[in-house]
Length: 258
Image 1 (spheres, rainbow, N blue to C red):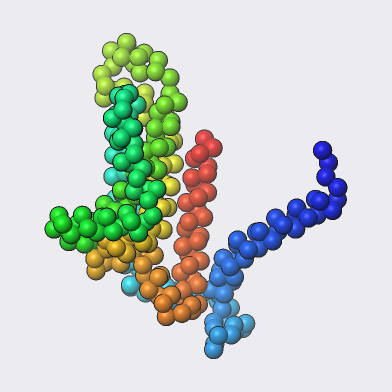
Image 2 (image 1 turned 180 degrees about the horizontal axis):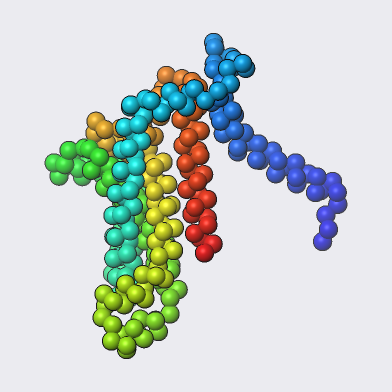
């Protein structure tokens, strides 16, 4: 069915408005990061990259970025290890117990972050664990574990059982079967899960706010800066975060297509 011209025009107008509403504020933030603000007005002859240089030489920002990358990398490694173990156990042990295990894995992910963060905070306090980057890493791992587990499990369930059976028939043991048969087939799914988990960890603020100690991550640092008002250096920092997030999303999309 071919729509009349006015219907097509209306649909294109609605789509354009949706794009403007969604991405207009982001593009405005990027645009303003290249200019100075004086009494709330843009100084049009101040175009340059000096606000990015200010951010790059800010020791607090660099330290917060390092903490964020460290926590994200550690959370990705831990969630991949736990996700692989749980996915293999779920795949090999049918029964009611695996349904309960799956509910436990997904619960921190589907609950509101404030509930997950408060639960972790109470647990750390009762266990006598001081809040630090370690508790932040644990919180992020608990949060992203469900995503990693589901991606790995979906790929594992799509593999033919004959691959493992053929490996055992040819004399390979469990370790050799995992290394030479299963791991190459799971590599793309693991890489995709790692990228998405890192993006979630990088962006997580509420859980981090509740379980962190004196060390600050980049989202917390940005939140603290915004309490004093939006300035060009904040716009520059937001632009860099947007650029990094976009690169992560593009990398994840390319891996999913493989």
